[in-house]
Image (cartoon, rainbow, N blue to C red; front, side, top):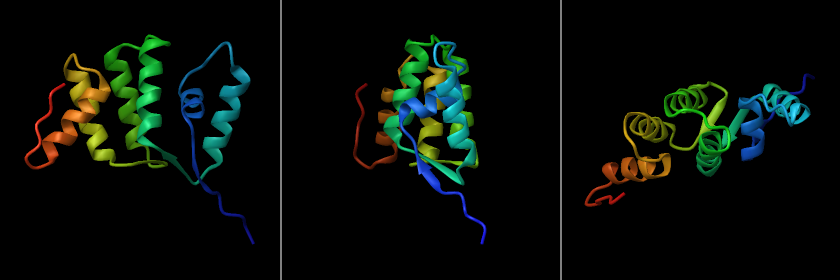
Length: 121
């Protein structure tokens, strides 16, 4: 009987290593890509997505438009399973089109979808 590939949950460092070519950690990038590539699906917790975005912006200095495009690709990838992906896509679009950070964009999108909630970001 053929073995079915598992759905895995990954931490920030694994997601980050699949997305960047880190010259200081080529082996880790290769390992992360192999792990993600062999999985049937990849569960990405919202905190992992947010922390990855922060690191890409701060440590890797990825420009806002490029970061938004990359995060959109991650959220729309058929293998990726992100909690409330439509809300994250809306938050990423707001982040791309404004000057607020992604965490504040996510808070604002969430507040807009709730009744009787006002966001102050």
